[in-house]
Image (tube, rainbow, N blue to C red):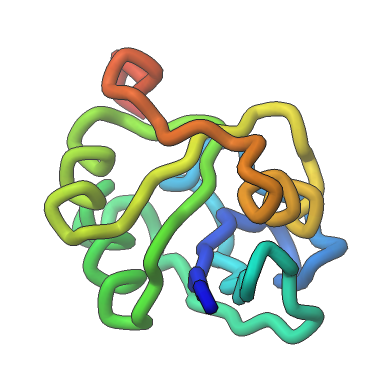
Length: 126
């Protein structure tokens, strides 16, 4: 039995039907989704994302690590946080095609989201 605690950067209210944020560092919060044996659980949790200035782009790494998150799915992320997540043992999945939290989580659950490669990281400052 495999379980993944997945963070999905979210705009507005958290939940499976919420809008996924395009860039994790500027999201309002993270919807935490549990994936068990390839199935997305209905129940979600939330981790608030502090303003981007407070601790910079590495702050969410610590917050999500403290929340017991195993993975994150993002459409965009800079190289520093990507390295930070990797060092924290949090798998970073790349998905830029699913604008809804639940759909992005389902893509990860189905094995359709690839692990983010450093070449896919944003090369500019946000």
